[in-house]
Image (cartoon, rainbow, N blue to C red):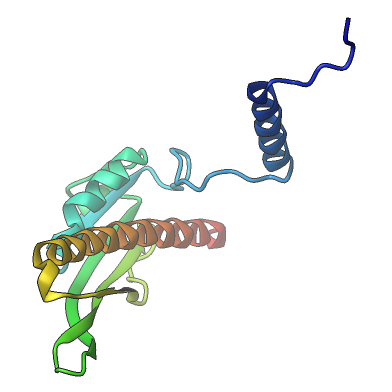
Length: 178
């Protein structure tokens, strides 16, 4: 009878996985998310005349974060105005034959907030995102899809950044109020 039997690979993998997870949780690691309790306010008024591209998705994101959207600014804890948005596509590089090799996509959105306790708006803030991608005439459909995908990702990143900033500014306004 053998006393020293090697562990099967499946058991070794399970022990390694458990050790890794234990190490990650012990160091305080956790996945980044907004969480339902991340927003320090319950209601929001969204004035979206300047950025219709992301307004609907921003509404959806606030709702999923537990924030109630109201139709009048007087009923809101925080008012958010999307002032303007701008998209651009610039040429980054050309080939020796003068054909485009790389593009840069730029998406910029400006917004401002106003807490219910204040009659004045905050200074306008800008979220600007840039992505570049290679281009080839021989892969036209694939590059068109890549550009569309990059734009959608940029919109999603802008929404997350706006939510983080609104949450932070609301926390600071709440902390400053006696």
